[in-house]
Length: 79
Image (tube, rainbow, N blue to C red):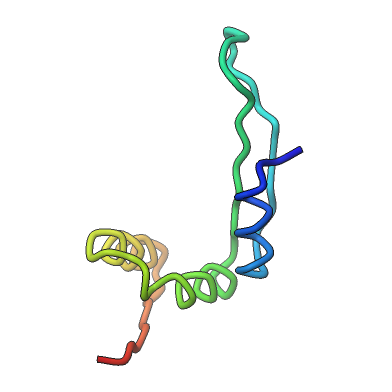
């Protein structure tokens, strides 16, 4: 089963698909899982919820990623 933290994140955000387990090609290590959110509206919704908890670098990376896709990410926050 996927880790509880991924299940909790998906429940709180209301978005995302969990994939896995995936195993290393050499057969060593623990199984890994990933949680993916796709599509502009869904990703934007998640970022709006996470924005207050993100640092400057992660905010800039999010805006850059949207810009590369030809989208503009505008999030108004209270000061």
